[in-house]
Length: 345
Picture 1 (cartoon, rainbow, N blue to C red):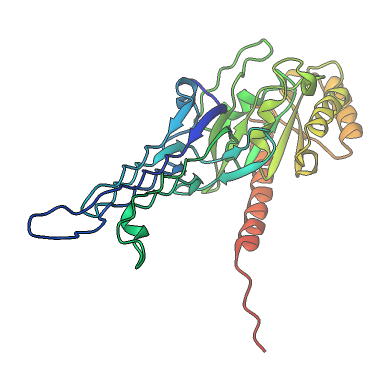
Picture 2: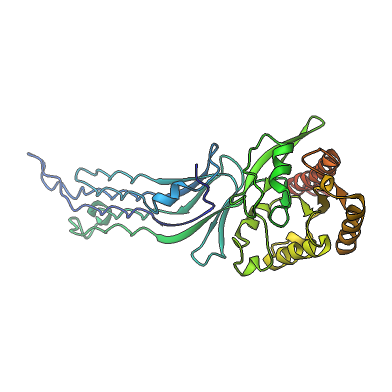
């Protein structure tokens, strides 16, 4: 399945049906009076978060969604049928944005969430609604109200507890493959990872979701490489594991390059708890390992972990540290979501 995390779609709710002008005509019944029914209401546009989806690929091939119109009213006081709704099904973590790509209309983060985006138009009154003591035979009815329409953006932000960041070929995909059941593409050339990946990490009978995103290079926020759009998938993460390639020319400069791109992207990424690790430690000589570790420590202003996803060195220590931060973030989120106790004198 192809991965698509952003799509622009057009949605329109249904028009209301028109009211009916009708009079009762039956044998032996004189002055039957008006009996025109009201028009039916137009269908609504809904956005629903469903299980089993992890991409917006369905909206690559269909971009227009229109709810049905309400039926017109009929004689004998019969109201027109309501128009059928249209439901857009999206995966968990999808944001609904206005056409300006900035105004957030809805944020669906839990399975089963359902938001009415556009309401259908009301049906028009039939002539039976206009009967009065001075107007016993009204010959007017209202047309139905038009539905609403707009262009919206669907933007997927993966739901993950922790995220991997770093330059291309820093060992992020290798780390994900070594610690989860995910099978990302791994090769010895830059930008092997073109789409975000998810995996479930299990540590001491506890689990958390780890996200891997494509590598960042200098100028990614200006479109260099494959850009920085995929950083949206780690905005919801509670912690970041920053992998720095130990075989690079200068570990400190590599660290600062990625941090500069995170700062340029914004959305609070530089403020998230960060674990810094020097990867591919098993490929370095003792002298070079010490030098790169010191460079990275000066740049990050914290002691980095030494790890190798191939040999397993330092992997469990990094996972346990990540798990501690993730569980703290979960507890804070649960506390924030808990309703405040009602104050009573």
